[in-house]
Length: 352
View 1: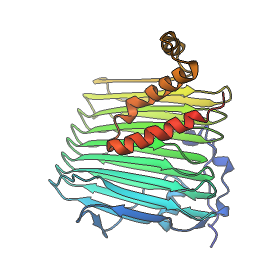
View 2: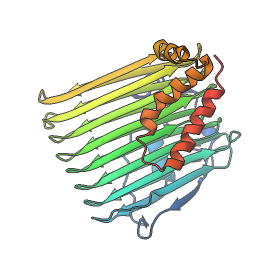
View 3: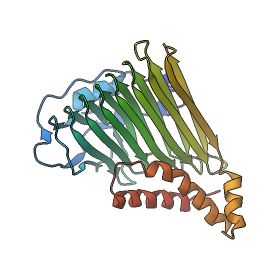
View 4: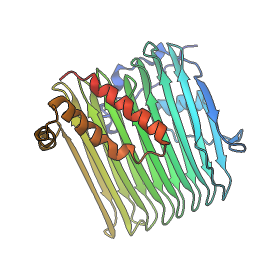
């Protein structure tokens, strides 16, 4: 059945500012599950209750109605040596899918989860993924989302993570695919001593657009967060980053940093970067920084002065720009090398 009529958000709303949401024709898509495969050690995948979403917009309503849940639970004290992988493949044009990953990690447990989204370039589809992560006291959680979607697929994602006392959560994203690909991430340091880290690599070419909205939310004392997002746009592609560090009055002693760097590699490419602070106490240490611009001339000229051809010099500068984040991803060297190759392939298609 066609998707019922719902009230779509608009670009007039701050959280959707600069977006392409006005282009979405939701009634073109029918709810159809994507193909999902899971590789996990015994005792991780559960059939338990799926917690309700906080309803922010109609896409959360749709997820509640059509959720395709994967529930992963790690018992207290368990260290999972093998990375858990969850792969979603969209195969049908005209489909909308609503995968939801619930990751509940017990006290002092340790786990890494890699979730991948992919489709062929001729698949005209919509995917609306939701991720809910809870890290109990002292838990260590690494989560990586990899977007390898085709050129005609839209993604509207939302990640929510809550860390209790002395927990550590790392949220990582690699975004290379999709037509319009959006991820909103809310990382909440809810217990004293909790730490959250967010890192992302994104690269848009052709007419792609990548859109990131982040929240580093501190509601307990002596918490910390760090964010490093690096992106590039070329041809007529676009990107948006808007981020907020929010520190409550109770979150004294908090340390929080936010950095977003963007390269514009073609004359027609465009990137927007909007970092923000909302601080309700003065006993904190935090900062934010952002930049948008072309390749650094000094770096390129330095390499050229060593006899490196201009096109090779530019390639080295761009790959070096991304390497800082790629080295932080919770992946094997094989997967890191594969992602590095995919970035290099995009760069080789650049039209100045």
